[in-house]
Image (cartoon, rainbow over all chains, first blue to last red; front, side):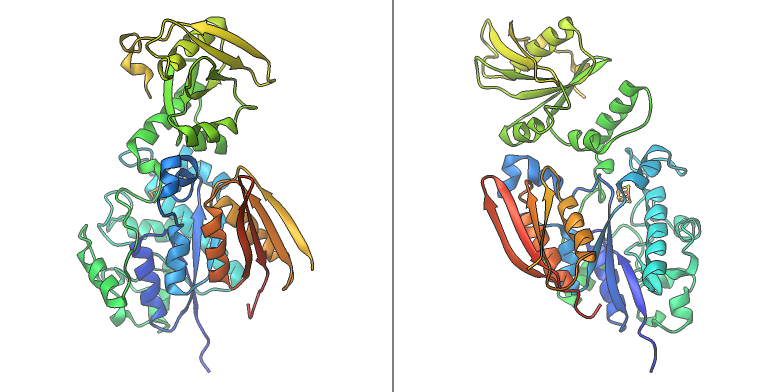
Length: 347
Length: 78
Ligand code: SF4
């Protein structure tokens, strides 16, 4: 009896990885999915925070894809190791702070470790030549295979016919004739294949699979590095960049101001780690202060927060300042007027 | 019945799912895991993960603003 061959599929939750896995399943290969959690993934987080997003139907797309395929999904936490990819990408960043090529290399190298540990035979991804300007070009395909160490154990079923033969093809575990030759930015071939397999309702992320492709998010991350004087981040930092209005009235501190109740609740969870301001006399937001502040800074911060409260047009708004040891003091301030808030403060 | 409680409060999805996954690996068939969470996303994500990986969902409910999900381990024919 021939040995049952096994492939690990990198599952991002998008259509391409769904199709790539199905193409290989169709050839009788046992497929299991791996989904890497970097901390920047768009999945999950935001729906937990913003109240209005809670109403929307929520699902983890990687889990959804695995369920459509009827395969197991292993979610792997790579948050710590991934930092080196974001902080020092050898191949640089894309349009924003997305280190896509280094990211791909890193994920495939992690998948290689995984298949070795679990006794799987090869790795598949949903990459398509020319699909993405930075990481999915004809020249980058061998770079990912080489630098990850996966070499010819890495098979891209959607564009394999445009690439050199890989081990699974040479060994006859999969039939190259039944693989695809997709290339370019068009999504039509994928949509046609999805229709053929009967997949509907799949996710179509526009920019990429993570927050690092988001311009606003990248600006906030770059600001954080500048303010700290070094490139580094903790999990809490990158979570907080997804929430609230961020304003930096001075180089040494910034404010994270909730925009609605859900964000207020989320930020409240950080009140032992950050000094914060809340409004007392009027309904208003909760604002965390990130940085070392003196009396004048606190006063300025309070005036700014008052601007976002319902007392914004009043002469005076009362706020409470609480430090991380829970010492509280009250401040009475005049809310800043819009013309007193320079545009550069808004990150 | 052996039941292990894991505190996933303040963790956002998919971290609670990863916690359940890691805990499941160390437990025998029939053992139960109770995850106490604050991200409502777990009410869909942990059941989906359990279905996919062949474990049994015992319950998923909201209680005093927290979300409790109980899963029974079934490693099947792994
Ligand atoms: S979009 Fe994000 S997760 Fe996707 S390849 Fe680029 S850096 Fe990696």
